Length: 102
Image (tube, rainbow, N blue to C red):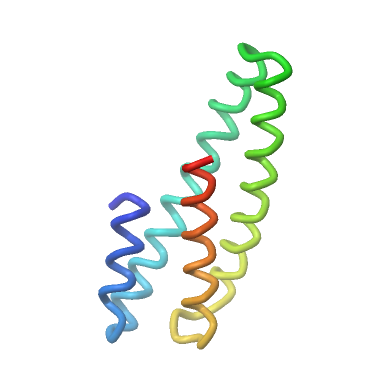
């Protein structure tokens, strides 16, 4: 499943902790894959081919990635049954949407 679908499945499985955990893990995995791919492929290409503007974009996006990584670490240390898990999960999704819209 893609990130958005994993998020939606997590939300729709609200009363089933096992399913929520499955979709939360899928969401984190997909999000981590996106971040790694951008950092290994996209940003170096921006820097190489777009000069100063590419370096600026890559720098800003890396800062956004740092925040998302912090949220992912928080989620990894919590259980989906934790009262503030959903808020952290939603914040990670919101940062991703902001990053994509960027």
